[in-house]
Amino acid sequence: MIRNGAFAKLFSLVFAVFMLAPLVVVMGVAFTPEGFLEFPPSGISLRWFEAILDNPDFIDAAIVSLQLGVASATIATVICVPAALAIGGGRFAGRDALQALFLSPLTVPTVVLGIAFLRFLSMMGLNGTFGGLVFCHVVIIVPFVLRLVLASVTGLDPSIARAATSLGAGGWTVFWRITLPAIVPGVVGGWVLAFITSFDELTVTVFIVNPATTTLPVKLFSHITQTTDPLVASVSTVAILFTVALMLIVDRLYGLDRLLIGEGTR
Amino acid sequence: MTGDRARPWLLSAPALLLFAVMLVTPLVMTAILSFNSFDFYGGIQPTFGFSNYADVLGDSYFYEIFGRTFLIALVTTVICALIGTPQAYFLLRMHPFWRSLMILVVLGPLLISVVVRTLGWAILLGNNGVINEALRNIGLIERPLKMMYTSGGIVLALVHVMVPFMILAVWAALQRQDPATEKAAESLGAKPFTVFRRIVLPQAMPGILSGSLIVFSLSASAFATPAILGGRRVKVVSTTVYDEFLNTLNWPLGAAIAVILLVSVLAIMVAWNRLVEKRFAAVFQ
Image 1 (cartoon, each protein chain N blue to C red):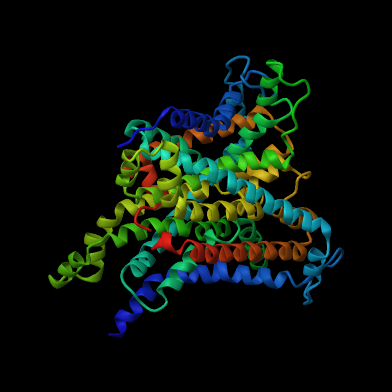
Image 2 (tube, rainbow over the protein chains, first blue to last red):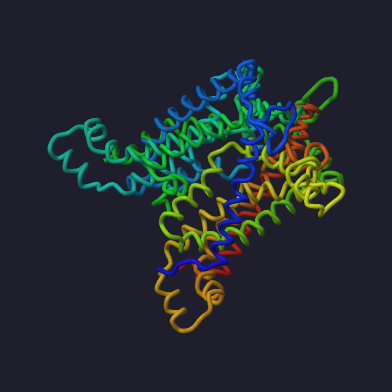
């Protein structure tokens, strides 16, 4: 294996600084004892972390985001597993069209999805409801789940399921005892990626929330566009730490590159 | 057996039903909405005409917004390709320990909300921000450089958001290459840059092309970054749609702008795919 030279090392170092700078700055600012954004902070204070507790808006928004992420990721996974078994299970007329449809939310600009959902939900009288929010998020995250589940379905050996069937196992038994255990990594990876995508989603969500169902990214966004105080930095820091913890767990369980490249889909 | 033929459709039925109700219907309703008209007092009027499209296509204000949006997306894509391609190549050649660390650095930010990352850029780029303060302290500048509320600032932050997608695409393409080709070139006396240009770059090309498509389409419809760093002063298509829907409340006009965005992004994607298939057919074989 050929190793990198000095230029490559310097390039990578500068690139790493570029990638981390905005995150480091946000986390640094959060610890300021002052009432305004300053970096580097003139001292270390947890004042702005305590301030989160005095702002139940942010906590409520975080709870909504968590519930929304869990609900939509779970529904998306439950409907994607059978769809992936169908699409990955063999050729049939309309298969490519079906797959293209399920991946299409990635191609439509998110702002277009946002107004489409707003128009639809308000005509149905469901605008701002939690249920409406959940199903919009399911549509957005289905492509992510489908790709990962599909990747593990295409790696399945169909002869094992056939062997189980020939030994008298019914369709459900084959699914629960043979198929599902084999695709579990893809299913879990898909769920986590879907949860994170839903948890971070702004562009669509900003159109379809009301004050009671405001999510954390929407709350942060509307706060930032009005004022910038260190409170947004401390809330962001908590969100960053939460994501990093989740990321490290996923990296251990599944491999971050596998999760994001979607191994086997190419 | 008819049961076998129905099986895939039965399995896909829940997802298909959801997409029919929650994706196809809303998009069709939006398309219809864009042909309705808007009355300041009466709200949305159920008429049918092309007046919104005529308004958008006949107004230089909207041309400027669309032009700026696609220019920002184009520059972001080019910069991502210029940075992402060598970085993906260096990643491949790294020691496994540094590589796994670097993958966390490259991919980790993808999982953190764009709002949070853009907040970081707002703190860095402001008139009293980190960069301006640092430059002033070392005496390079006297007055702050204006970076907030400029297209340049938006491009910088968008590159940060988009470059992981480029690296992922190039990385996937490079993993399929045969490392022996590099060694062969090197043993024949090629300098590192020549190896990169003549051996690695052609093999990375499919990744660069597909990555460019992803980066361009995501940048053209990005919302959070231009909304926070550009505000009302540097408007792009997505922030204009947002204003029409949530401030001006002229939904039909906003829908027409959104439909034009959707159609132009799809047209660019199809044209790009055509071009790529024609010119680089050999690479994909």
